[in-house]
Length: 327
Picture 1 (cartoon, rainbow, N blue to C red):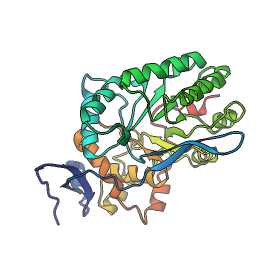
Picture 2 (picture 1 turned 135 degrees about the horizontal axis):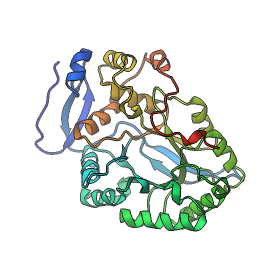
Picture 3 (picture 1 turned 180 degrees about the vertical axis):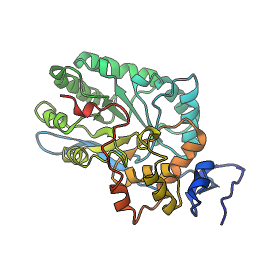
């Protein structure tokens, strides 16, 4: 069956993979391997994950909340209206997790999109982050959390992350105490970290009352990080994968295109589904509507039989920054 494009008569888009095409066809026509259909309600075909902050004294899980496994990242969406329109489109397609940060400068547009979407607040999962230059101590952490809530126009966010290990190691304990206060005050439903290495997580055991619920790090088929993923899970946290496409640096290479061709999906869909199957909450960034829809369709890709091919893609390739290796 050839791919079919149906014009909407109402409802929202839902994508599913169909038969494969040649690699040349895939590269010429970005959506050559998917059919576009329409349903009355958008649905994500993957159950949410339960995240929680684990007590360092008892090992009990506190503040447990359900988090979608898939969402939209909004990094580098700096043009006026770009972030807002992207979030609105993603929400229309069925996305329910949005990942932003004060450093991105677009928290206010995420908030505008939330309000204009008309979706119940409880159906959405909003993540933002404490900017690294602001991670200097307890009071600044409290202040910046409140500023992010004001930017978003929310009374409570779902997950608040320390964007990277504070530059001053002596400030890390007080910053985390500030994060714990944000949690206790009800300003966020959960707290976590981003770009923390295994040694950073280990050090937290000496000063944290509760450990992070999430460690957001770069993970993709070319940077698989099994040791760091295991260390994250070892402290009771869930891995959250940013840059699942390695910022597009590797997506046209032979290894991933051959895997995608064998599966009948696009290379981006194959890479995203690998991250999801690895157990990582995955947040590909795109402001292109076609790409946002294409990425969503990755949830229905079946990677069975490609394990060895994906293992061969590992090359410890860092596409962006890597604070996980800092002292």
